[in-house]
Length: 123
Length: 196
Image 1 (cartoon, rainbow over the protein chains, first blue to last red):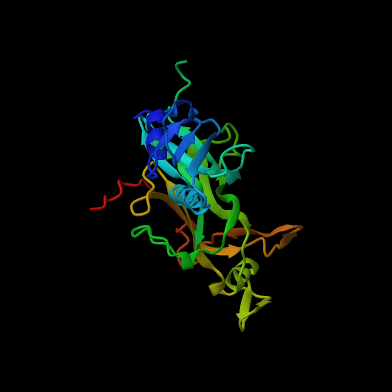
Image 2: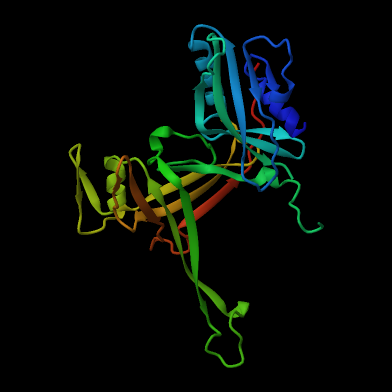
């Protein structure tokens, strides 16, 4: 599995669709996750991958719960994911999550900006 | 470039994260009993085993320094150091070294060492590409007969958590001086069991 495919599979493991930010379908419905695809290489610093969790709801509970699920899945020490000839080490970034409000946007759209860092241990 | 490369299995052999310090650990049954964690650390932990040699040829004419047949190993100093961010009575006593806990909240330093001031401690860290909760690989270092040799250091930080630096040194025992004061275990992980 390529690094790109492994990231796609990882972010799609949270019961809602996930898309690379450059490939969000025009008919995508809430809730969903978007992530900025970035690829690093072995022995380099970890790469920051900004992730956005999108809900359309009046409650903060659902987006908060989804971000909590991601937080727990990644865990304190991170999680490793196998790829062709190597692995990705996915870690919590800092700050972990922020609530983003954009003036003029639909007030029911709840957005969480999540920092995920990935170390590409792929020769 | 021909010589700018890594082994194809390098990703399977990385040690990951800072690991933990424990009072007890069984490499044959590598579970973590959280009640045995000595304290939370910050900035990682560092283990060093430094040998001291004697070169029997260094004062002999016509023998170069570092001739392997003439080199002898005198001893090894094994230390583990780092910084704790948490402390309790048990760790306070451990950091002082020669001390006793009296009652629930008092630690009295002692002027003399006792043999029970020396205790084994373990550093254990995640290892390998298979690092799951059940069958995850690990590197473990057993520091044998460890004693806090830099004593107690408390550094409160303005608007921050305090630091408690530590240096534990492993010790030989006169009962068997062929046993060096540390052991190392490197165990790759295996695939996690699947549910259902």
